[in-house]
Length: 251
Image 1 (cartoon, rainbow, N blue to C red):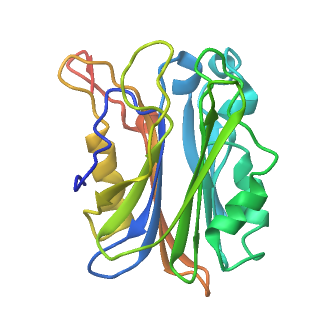
Image 2: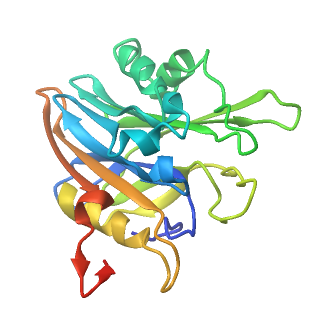
């Protein structure tokens, strides 16, 4: 899925991709989670009606982290469009989808009371996006400025067949504190003609180098086949459900 950018980083944190499939021209949203701590790893994604939720796989492990930042609806898909984010702000974006034909205006209004995450020392950025039925989309990054305030950037664009835009919480280096994502959303080539094929490609690109630690948690892909009639197709990959014991090794 690499055109000008790649998700193949050691530790990207969470990432969003909004774009359009090339052959069918279905619009799409990808949300992926990686995690370093046990509490971050103890999660999965599940579809519930018109939403995809981040949920626990091990409630005892999950309690070691900040539950307010770990459990949330990651994607809502409705007739007006798709809302996606790495936190509970997804609810506010979803509630604002019908308020404008401009996705940038929707994000600006929905996120006005949100700041970066209070997870010192990383102060993880809040990444958010929305994709409307008019095929206009926007991505938002709220991160910690040098003076401690919230630096807010919103990028609006039209989706193009075969291409997507990528934003991540971190730059990709596995160091402490984790360096926040820098710059504008990056252009991506969308490979795959179904939600499963796109999700599998992203999951593959997030795999560790040989001998490295596998930080993958989950990947979800939503195709908006006909948003107005609420015709959506989804596919979710959870690492916890793919782990098998074979010859004494986890694969």
